[in-house]
Amino acid sequence: MGTVLNPFFPPRSWLYVPGHREKMVVKALERGADAVIFDLEDGVPFSEKNSARDLLRSHLSKIRGASSSILIRVNHVDSGMVQEDLTIISDAVMGIVQPKPSTPQDILALSKLVGERESSLGFKKGSLNILPLIETARGVLNAYQIASASPRVSALFFGSEDFTLDMAVKRTAGGEETRVAKSLVAIAATAAGVQAVDTVYPFIEDVDGLVREASAAKEMGFWGKQLVHPRQIDPVNKVFTPSEEEVREAKRYVDAYEEALKQGLAVIALDGKMVEPPIADRARKVLAIAEAIALRAGSKAS
Ligand code: COA
Ligand code: MG
Image 1: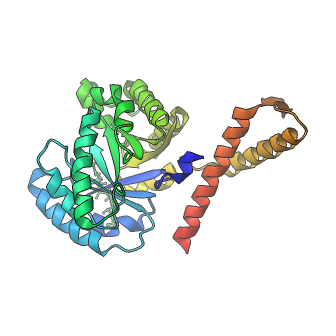
Image 2 (image 1 turned 90 degrees about the horizontal axis):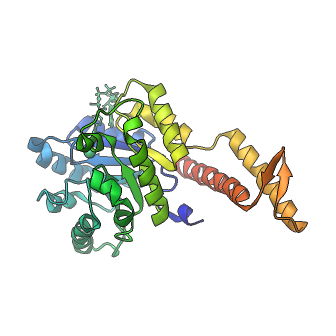
Image 3 (image 1 turned 60 degrees about the vertical axis):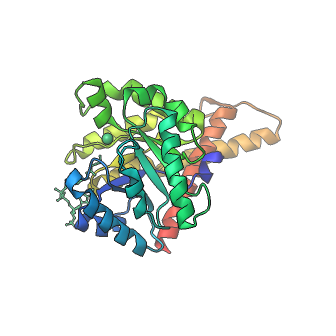
């Protein structure tokens, strides 16, 4: 299954950390998120961009063997700040979150700058990933072209806060205003062979609302969620981890189906339900996700 090869698989929890907040930065990798995104964009005021770069450059150069994937979020590709932002990259960094791309050309423009930085650091060509954050109306309509613009693209993020700003609508806890856009992003990501990651949930005290939004996103085809607070990590990891019951059921389906195949059957009935190839494949996918999560937890523990 191609998705397992993605460097960020399984991409459940992605914690943003404002790049100038030293206390948050130094402890960020201890919080247990699958991925940490050190931010230089909207989480950092203009007056603090330089101090954030200095802090992150020094911090990232010292990291060895982190158990979370490490990303940075740079400023908009047209801001004139990106070349400076990319100077913080060390070999601990796996990729760059690109805010507000609206066209595939935006991805190509960033990819060119990333390529230059990569070669000046002596990194293997193409080793740095780009993770576009779709958060404009044009971006949503161009999401498939954006996701397919470069082999560097390895996940597609959706961002509700800027999307609702662009649409001049309210960002509600229920999220009805973003349902269609999210669905388009999840479909575009799947069509391009990458995983979709859901928006941040800014209501940091509201864990029930967070779990509701994450569960709805999972049903739409998202694989994980961006986060703004460490308290959101465990509930979101739980939503995107197959439960023991789901794993047990998936095993039963796979075992029964493989037995049926041996007997020359392609469709069987199990527990009053028809089981055919896509249902068996879905069960295999649940097992692959559970296995990848267990492997990741094992490598964190060792
Ligand atoms: N990353 C890492 N650590 C964080 C964190 C984050 N995003 N948010 C909070 N923490 C830490 C705090 O430093 C504190 O640590 P400590 O217990 O070791 O002292 C602990 O978590 C509890 O924090 P709390 O007091 O509840 O939060 P706060 O009031 O300090 O901060 C926010 C609230 C919203 C300002 C903060 O969570 C934040 O800045 N989030 C990221 C916002 C962002 O990046 N936005 C742009 C992307 S959408
Ligand atoms: Mg944004």
